[in-house]
Image (cartoon, rainbow, N blue to C red; front, side, top):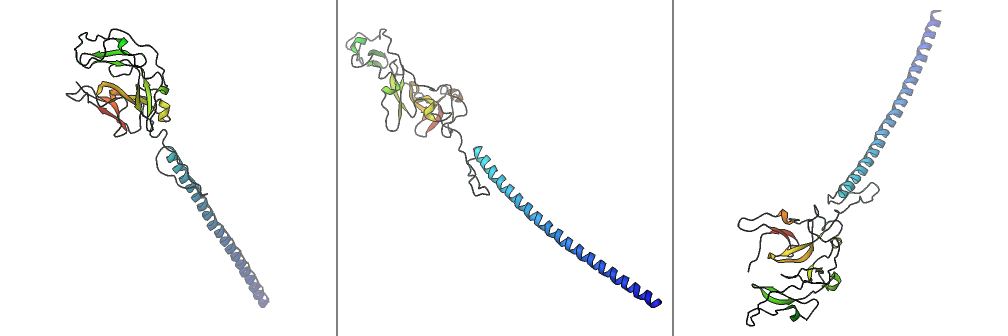
Length: 265
């Protein structure tokens, strides 16, 4: 009887051992399987995260370029180039609208004043090329114009529209109504633009004094640039002994700059 009990207990223990072994084996497989999935999931997540970062980086580069950062964008995960957008109106845009500019071309009228030129009647007076308007017959609307300092000379309307002004290979020419040197005749002036649209998107074409300031008046029309040091005369201050400064285009440096230079004579 005792032997039978011992055999029964031994059998139960073996069965329990086998059950535990099987349970541990199954648990180990589950752990390995779960562990495998756990290692695969971070890898997949890392891949997705990497793609998102790459895409984000590409988008950031594209966005940065679009905002005018000026740097080249990165590449997207697909190998496409992230877009780079140039500065809007680069080389023409200005921070604000100039007080003086030429949005559209103008046509000059066909008439000129015919008031007495006031030339001296003395036949021996110096620097007198004409004494009456009727002396000026070599061109359109001839008028005798002058003063005691500069003398008197014939002046003519050289144009009535921009199309009357021949453009050179490297310049445009504007027909400036009443723009003559100390006279009211129409003249063709040089420059690099005729109207604002010639200066690109958001660009402006403005009249400029030369190196003598108001002494000779406007000498040409030029585009403003995004490197200008001034936009209007009000941006320029007086310089001690010199009069109020003015904003003028400097062909030698290719941009607008303040000047206090004024000629006298």
